[in-house]
Length: 190
Image (cartoon, rainbow, N blue to C red):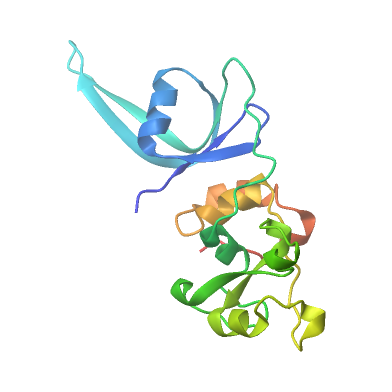
């Protein structure tokens, strides 16, 4: 798997993951203002009249300028993949870890009872616990949550969606922007 490049705005706020091709285009268009971290890839170009080959070192983290300062997303999109990563592939009812194919999204307050499909109302559940809970409220049955659901900030979300390909220097940068409660012990770098 090819490592991805973390794109920031000029203020150092994380925005998105880029492929090496997308990052190379930003370098060539002279939109990269500053960079951090090690070199992810060296791209080699053509040979000039003097016989010299051009090359471009792509850094792990790049900050890009432009006409307007790009803003990070206020609310990251809710996907099962990001949700399961947030909850560390663990059912938040029984506490057991499961492979992705055995996990489901459960609404703490069921949609049929006015609950919304938002980060703060969904948790990872195994099929058994999700079926047992059904469309009931937790106080109506003998079940409780092991952790409260939360909406990740921009840095946390980017760590969640790329956690299998993230480099140490990128994780160190992102971790500095995690919420204080989640800074330690959550999504350990591999």
